[in-house]
Length: 106
Image (cartoon, rainbow, N blue to C red; front, side, top):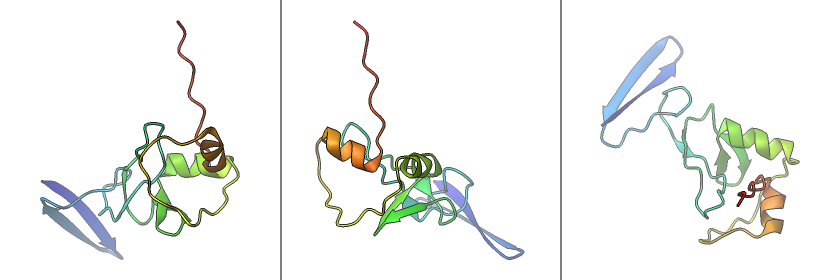
């Protein structure tokens, strides 16, 4: 069971329940997940409220950390996104600002 709150002016409402997800940053009700692609083909999926979800395209939001990385990489609006499973190519990672993976020393 999770709890989250919603602030409306001076009024605060607390929600608790099985399907209540709090924002990972502030604890308010989360309406979004971070869609930033990770190297394993999945997405960050950090729970985010409307205040902390950085809009980067149609139905695409990033958490503050990944939103900053996206802006630092050029911050172009992302359109025509197709969901897929698998790994991103080097060019795709470069376009969306995914940092290069550090090489493991052998």
